[in-house]
Image 1 (cartoon, rainbow, N blue to C red):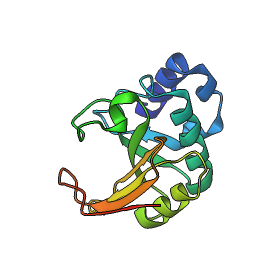
Image 2 (image 1 turned 30 degrees about the horizontal axis):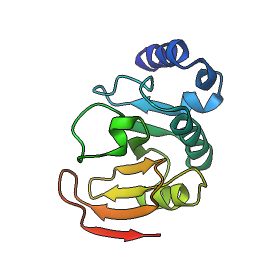
Image 3 (image 1 turned 90 degrees about the horizontal axis):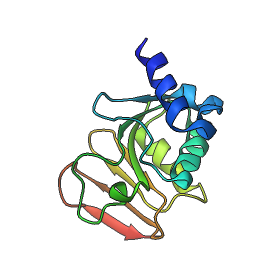
Image 4 (image 1 turned 180 degrees about the vertical axis):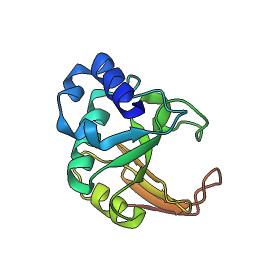
Length: 136
């Protein structure tokens, strides 16, 4: 029932994405209010990502606490948990997408992807300073 309500919410707020079968492979943690705050290019990136790695659970979009100047605040980033593969494989798949700028993994199994201009990768701890960072 919850998935049905989420799909209905997405259909109402983002009609172009709702017609895509990839939407059925996206779920949300309770604190995430949907994808209405995300930019069009971010939504397209999510579609590409889901087509490549399978279902995901989005854990963060625009709301919540993020680093200062985070791509989340401008609707250009999501954090997610891959449901059909490992976080490491999901991050590698995300890095191979042309539309993805930054990719990060956290020790709790979450993956960050954004469509920002800077191409960076990192592995670190949630709510801690980035531990390993490198520009691609």
